[in-house]
Length: 184
Image (tube, rainbow, N blue to C red; front, side, top):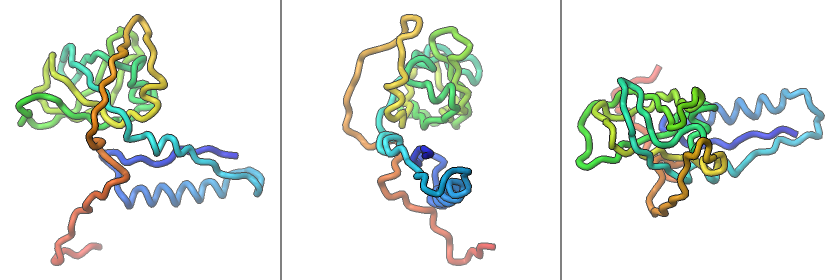
């Protein structure tokens, strides 16, 4: 028996890439040194919940391309710190920023060396202390892995009814190719 996670759409997702990953996964599962009667099991929960849950964090401090935020590896961002996932992010500020995006890394509030999310996370270059960031697509594990390490943590939950930042379940218009372009 083997287990695998299901795909989820990320900002870098594409139908072509998803298809390639699916074909490779199938081929690799067939080449595993296991009995012909074994089954490949999939974890549909990851795919069903991947778009679920955003986290709103406050920027406490900025130092160059490093943002110190009020949540981190011991909060809902375990996967960003320890697995290296780059969740989609968005600056929540009115009026919207017109600054060019730049790459940032995040540090959580615990002062622990492991409370670092390398990213890169693309946010407007003029982000500053006091701004809020939406970190999307935390899925079920964002809540399940959360702790109150060193006394940090929040029980405040706000339910909103909006679309996810990125979705596998809605149609995304693929970029059109002009009819005068030849693909090689």
